[in-house]
Image (cartoon, rainbow, N blue to C red):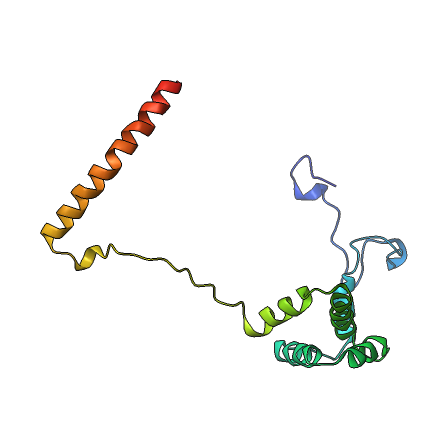
Length: 158
């Protein structure tokens, strides 16, 4: 509750140490901020998973045969992550695609570098001042007419 007068004498006295504001000192069930269920779940488990654990598990799944993947998927003792990965690989196999393999390999090895290939014959840094001016003049001669035509066309549309 707010304090409209702004003076401390209008405030309720502070609670005694170890007491709360609930009648009888007991908070009713279902009142207040909900508990963080994920935090509670994580605190129950002593198991911690590192990146290396996931990488090794993924490497093992990638080289497993179809029969091994089926057995891994059906084993109730396996962690859910292992089961889900095995099921995804099997589903891809049935559909004839490699999406899961590609994703797992990208996670393990990193995405493949895709180089850009092009031919550059204008290494301007290697040119002398005279060669640079000659190339610039040639470029302007070739492209100025096109630029004027584009600008003229755009002005004509307005």
